Amino acid sequence: LKDKLETMAAAALNGNNPNELDNHDGHEKQPEKKKAPPRLFCDICDCFDLHDTEDCPTQMQMPDTPPHTTYHGNKHEERPYCDICEVFGHWTESCTDDQTF
View: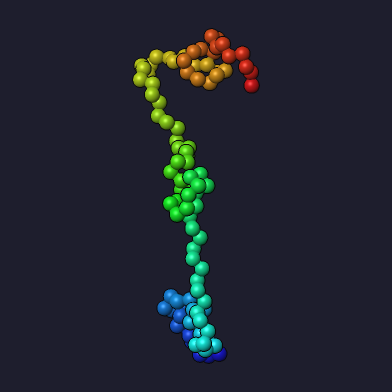
């Protein structure tokens, strides 16, 4: 048991996995083959090995910040804004939207 403990301590110091060094049963056994890592698959593109679904370049992602304004008018001039539609371009009084929320 002391030999096993020393082997495990040496493995930990060397950065090795102690299970890989535990070969006291003999040399007749073949080392177990490690399983290959799972292949990447994209559900959107329906393809293997290019990228994962989460990393798909065709996937549209929302930006963290809203786009900058494209209004290039006078900043001292009041812009018409509609409280019903919640858009600029016309006043609330002249809104033709009949829907209420």
